[in-house]
Length: 496
Image (cartoon, rainbow, N blue to C red):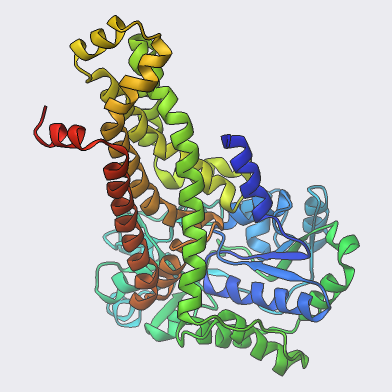
């Protein structure tokens, strides 16, 4: 099967009917996504929640490309990050007009703001006499740690630093949950917060007053594709019932249930819909741990298997070409090596504009990463065959194709299998990053566990991934025993 056919099959598997709701990779977005999915379902429309797809740009691109139909967003983010500051965050008609030009609609506000803010431990702020962001000007030695998205967003650290002319130079990018732990341990002094974040109360933080109003208003809304109003008007009307129905206190309470109490976002959402809108029986059944692991195993194995088969189909011929034509071989090995040096997360994000979200970019990235070990080992296996053996095959009158098929590839099989085994183990581990673009697999519980600081959830993904890597290695050990004659195995073991 060609790589194109494999990717097409993956694309077909990733597609879905009905309404597809997306969400970013933090608790509040997950809960809001669940609210929308359940209200669409309550309106009689099949719905699917593609949860925790990634950051703002990933989910926005998915919406524009039609891979999700709507997702929760904030007006300040729309104005500053998505529209480049061309429209004021509080000018709703202008926002709607600018979005409509891109085929996107915006619901009314949901009833609360979740603005950016800076936070410190209450005890540390009292010790330094800090209560406003401008107070940080007097403390250039403070250590600042912000989420990676905040570090680079147009409405994040660059805008804040420019507005206040902040002098701090010890500024690091890290995950939100890690920042909270670092604050508690005294490793950081200041981090960025969301104003409805339940961690503020949990860690006894104070929110510094934005006295120069660097941050715009961040009213919560849903962004949706304009064609959704024609394709599923009843679903959109049902979702719009949330407009003005969630105040900040209700959102903080829901975030607290999901983030601190560990209650599933689907259950938190269904409880709110029951109490606020009288909607019942909308939540999907919660999966048990065994069912979750089984489903993640199917997703992970599918990603690895498709990528590995595609890599094998291309890498072995490339290795043969590299062995037969040394000049071209250096180019092939060099190109495969360059691909391997690209950070996996960066490669995934770069593939999104081409392949969208879900299984397709994940399979493509894994396919590219799987090439080098197989190409290199195929080349090494063929070029390592003793000269007298190749001359003997030529003396028998075998054609070049017959020599390759009957003599050289069998002799190189141990090296090729070693490359495939290395590629398989790398692919199993790297596939956990596929969860960052909505591909599922073992990476999903790992990311959720990191977000909730839950070791059991992290282990729910990490342990099966390790076991799968060991199983893949064992499987190729068995394949080697079956495919490689005993004499070759003995000669290899003896170093001959």
